[in-house]
Image (cartoon, rainbow, N blue to C red; front, top):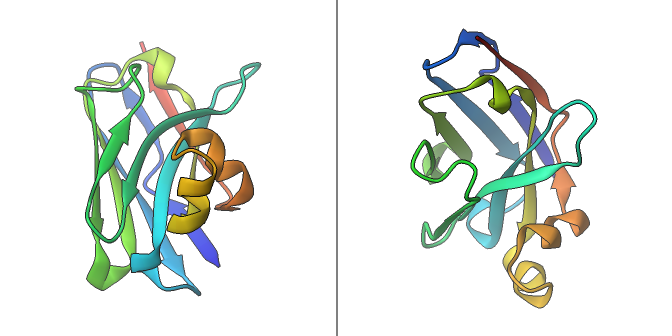
Amino acid sequence: VQLVESGGEMVQAGGSLRLSCAASGFIFEDYVIGWFRQAPGKEREGISSITSSDGFTKYADSVKGRFTISKDNAKNTVYLQMDRLTPEDTAVYYCSAIRRPLYRFFGSTFRAFKTGSWGQGIQVTVSS
């Protein structure tokens, strides 16, 4: 399983970014893909997930209404569209993948991804 994030950069508050997570080495439709972030001095936070087979999505309250997760099964890629960014969104962003049965076994929550595979992370910086 290999996950590669891209699209991170510095942006001004109020701006937008789109992150990509390119997946390889597994059957994309069998997995749930999640986006997480970790700000300096804070714990890693689950912010969104999508089930590759049916497109079911979840969002953390902190990003609901501003971030949109989507997928392109033909490209084995998951996207995170981030709008109305604030300095509080500054963090390293990671994508993670976990097989659907394992995700359900661990309660279908962001915590389930602890057992999954992870990308290397990418920096997003929002300036005020």
